[in-house]
Image (tube, rainbow, N blue to C red; front, top):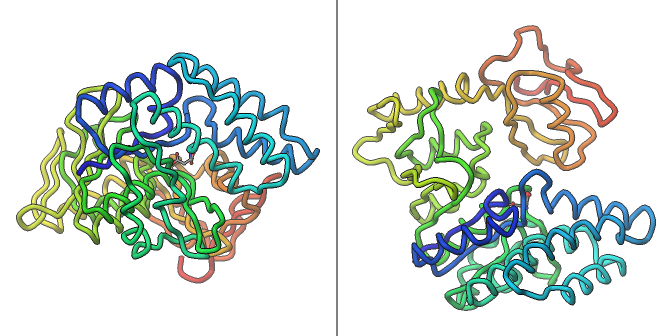
Length: 361
Ligand code: ASP
């Protein structure tokens, strides 16, 4: 059974929802995972701003109004009435339902609307995406609750339910993880629909076929096409992943067990043998994507960097990710200036500071 996840760029507006409906019908997709509308301004960022406004002033009404407008314009194009849901969510945020609840409502509303457009069941992530108290995927519990996935259905990505009943967010981009967990639990195949033709090599070509480990490595080092934490879930269950473009008819990239002894080929170049495939991935990570390093966050969390070069802009983006105040670089690949020494302060701005880790750089 196919589990297909549609990212925020595919669901940015009413045209996006219409296009996604066509794809789902054409491919007869029974289980759909929906992100919050993305595009120029991501609904998730707008919800974070609305929550912050509530924290500052006791009311999210100003910022929330913009979110409501966006959803209303999507729903209205399909004759769907969501005023009551919008009002209920606003009231809940204003009554202090908390950050994770507030920020998860983008996916919630997106999935509700898409389910109605398709005539599918809406299955809340609370019913089937089970998390541990620390917010990790609880795979055994997801399998145990897979009966809640009544097909055909749309499930919101990006959040799940902890054993204490509370909603918990996954990391940013986490709808990929929701989809991977569900695909792995039901042993379905996994499709990710996004706004690029697949996973790119370092020469501008799309890679046709890639092993799980190479895909994880690439995504870890910054290929933002997929949240890297999704890959081990599908690898463990040996569920194949196809990355496809919502806006073109490209073949896409298939991630799965390496065929033969392992090879990766792209539309531009061909690589044979496991070692060469790895070399290729290194080359992509080092040159093509120009991912300079990975960082570990103070609270042991990891973050991906998808910016080119070691620029102040890249560093600012790292700090903005999750509202962090301090980040430590723990490992480097690619084009890192040799002058950086452990303990060096790399960047200091109004948002925070970045140091070179003195443990293992
Ligand atoms: N909407 C969330 C984000 O912007 C999660 C996702 O799209 O996967 O990060």
